[in-house]
Length: 262
Image (cartoon, rainbow, N blue to C red; front, side, top):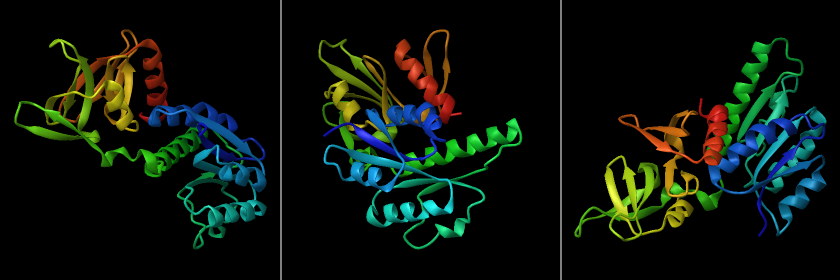
């Protein structure tokens, strides 16, 4: 099985830079996975990638420049019914064309052909980013719907707790007892766990992010950062935590935060 794919249908390459610079880094951060961007300009190239046994296509962005491309979009929606599609169209296109049974996109973005001012340009960008974030978070791949999973933790010899991913604030390696344990900080308290940090990271790949060799943090709780000392601020609503990150991982968090977590 090769790396996972993101297909973008965009004959005129209008969205190529936007997807590469903003969307792909977020997908890699969100899912802790390697993703490859596949640019397509016709139905044949799209279907070839969707049907290849070497690919797993998780997302598809379709940029509709004019109504003649509705036929391609319709074929994709009807033949690949389980593929979530983010549809981008110019405002001049009649939106009733694709709001028909079986053709409704999971998310869509309306784009003006000519932007008059910088303020309008920024507003269009913000709307596009919000739609893409919602699309990615709501239609995530089936094999990483990790919120349904839980792991065991103990706070004494008798009590065993099942910890859900969304409850975790951070995970830190603890070798003070001479054993390889992980200290899991949750919204309910702290629990030791015998699983390795790599096993916990794999279980909650969509929820947790490894910010340095021995620490995982909950991505949804990232509330800020400090560039002077590479600290990431986590906020649970009741408490705040500062976690030290490596320079490389801090830069990944910084990029994702600036694009999607503002």
